[in-house]
Image 1 (cartoon, protein in one colour):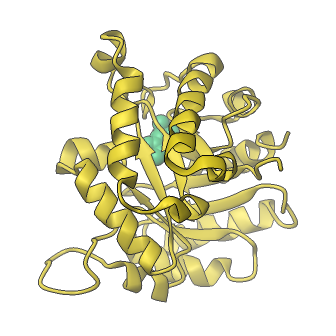
Image 2 (cartoon, rainbow, N blue to C red; image 1 turned 30 degrees about the vertical axis):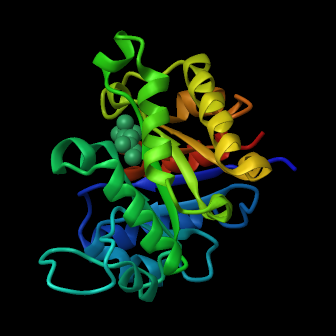
Length: 252
Ligand code: 13P
């Protein structure tokens, strides 16, 4: 079974509610009837409900950028998985490198967040990726392997059916420097082999997205690789024509 490409726009800390709703409407108009690619957008928490309402019935899905692992409690500033489910999130990003680097998110936190999402019926997009220093030291597969194992530990083999992995080399995020298609494929194939170790044949159905300076001009080549099943797009997802072109480039 070929894997259906999955492209998600990560809007990071960009767009007010009004701006986010307008962007969502532009995307819906540009991608109407495009069912061959699964498409989602991840606006900031404040815009989730409004963007979800604007996207209802369009086929574009809603993702959150983070979540807390408890369902409720005294955790000032945090948002729980049941809260995300209530506003219509089908996906949530966990372990983004910005959260790991700037906010101290650990593999253990990623695992707890992924577990909480699964319990709430939300599909985790688990981000992994090495820094430039780690790549130059020849440690890419070791680091990514540790993040995948740590992020999925104990979730059970069945969890693979609901999980997306996003490989985002830290040195390629927001830098304009993209991994070559061959570099991406090497890591994606290693992730797939590890998933097979953890979950057997279920690994064949898992989508592994590439992220890091994905643009209309490089998306098609990256996505032509056998284990590159989609993209997690930052900067270019904020411009509707670019994001639409990337989705169309995902068709193979
Ligand atoms: P850029 O596409 O801006 O490099 O960001 C990638 C990313 O971090 C998506 O999650």
